Image (cartoon, rainbow over all chains, first blue to last red; front, side, top):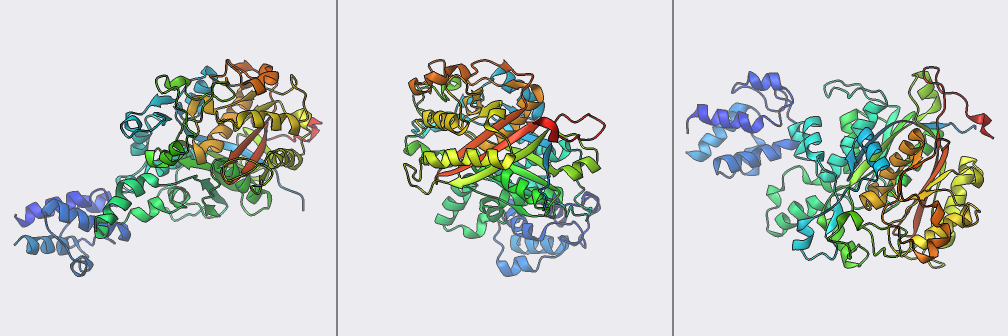
Length: 82
Length: 439
């Protein structure tokens, strides 16, 4: 799966959680999920579960803890799919 | 210290027969039943296959709340939050922007629930935990199963900064919440309190009651006839769901902002029968019921003769005749002199922790409109209630001079709650006028 395709899916998953719709519309790999998109930190758990379901992967707690930006998520998923 | 006066300046309701004040008023006047056959209950072998579930609440929730909130809102949260937001707006306040850091320190909430988020527990928490999938439960379980989840949800939606809590006292919960919130305002600890109750729609909530054989079983084929308070053929209550919320406010605050006032909460009382003298976990001690009603009248400063109408607890179990006799004793009336007595549950079933709150909204609608709503399905009045038959409105009873109404709720645990409301007759636009001259 291309990085572009993964990014598209990741953004789609983040959509219901992002309180800042503007930031989501202008999202880049550098966008911080919590401070940039204003996702409630407790909901990161649900976002990671949604990644697992959408991409058919498993994300351990240590890996999940390292995800801060959209790019971190895309690279993590890319790595799992490789 | 002089006690501060408390008035009702807004309301919200999610009931099985209507959502929103104007449709609820129309439903009450028409005697519209909200009870329907629930196929799932039949599939599961329930003795009672009828329930009162608000229709269209999900569509309203989707219009009111963001997607990420909805993922963490079970039916209890949805009903409670819709009613609370509606009460807030009805009182003249805009919904705050989530990005605005202003907190309403003077406003709080007591929104109770009888059983709580058993749908979340039954559909996700228990099966997933038992299957070893704890990790996959996600972040939204705790806030949906914690007792205070519904009031916590509302505080976030409306930026409430005063006391925010969920009370629980079984079927007296909604009425207790109203009294507790009013007392906080009376004490000067809050200016505005959103008070009421919410109960989700879930067969997990209703199953235990069905097993106790306290639910209606003989009218499954005729859902609208299944809830029969005060009837000789009453055979148990019909479970219901929904929410009612009153926006209670100090008279000072309401006057200062020129708020529209529906009614004054004159007073109320709470007690417990101690599971003695005929009381038990499931039955009320008759003396405690009489004492609770008398204490509410005393707290309200109202003579029993001033009561114009009664909104009973009246669930359609064997306790109805005892209740009617308790009203007669507490109000010191002879048979034939009892004020009109009605049961909202005849239309919507028993919404458990939400019941007293939805029924209090009904009381205030009746005060506003000058009527007593019909009490359905008791054409065959119970023999012990026969002496009071003239007090039961089988159809809409216009009462243009309806001024003071009393509402009681009784719950498992032998707990009682009773509240007295009076119609507000202040001049519109001139602010509330003193009501001290009624005697």
